[in-house]
Length: 88
Image (cartoon, rainbow, N blue to C red; front, side, top):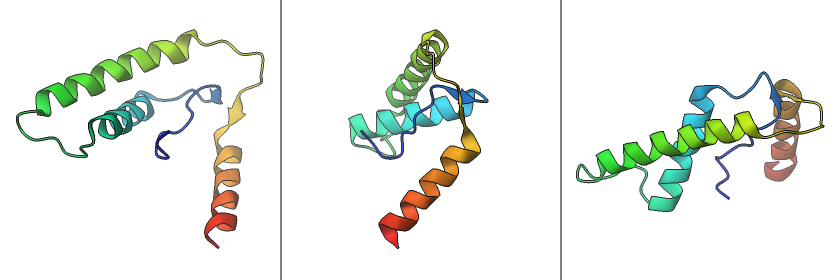
């Protein structure tokens, strides 16, 4: 999985539309192999991002879990700590 795509499920507060769209953009970039599509492909690229973001939003709304929601600040601190250990 692309490192830039972050888990969006089961957070408090829930993922925003911007976060969902950013994840969709990263997915389309990874699958297409293009960070910036040509003018000929721009419309198709944008449509794919919009559709994937839409489906992702539905997925996040429909998923159920018994686990308590994760705190964004706590998870960010854990990620910073992992990065510190990994990169020194």
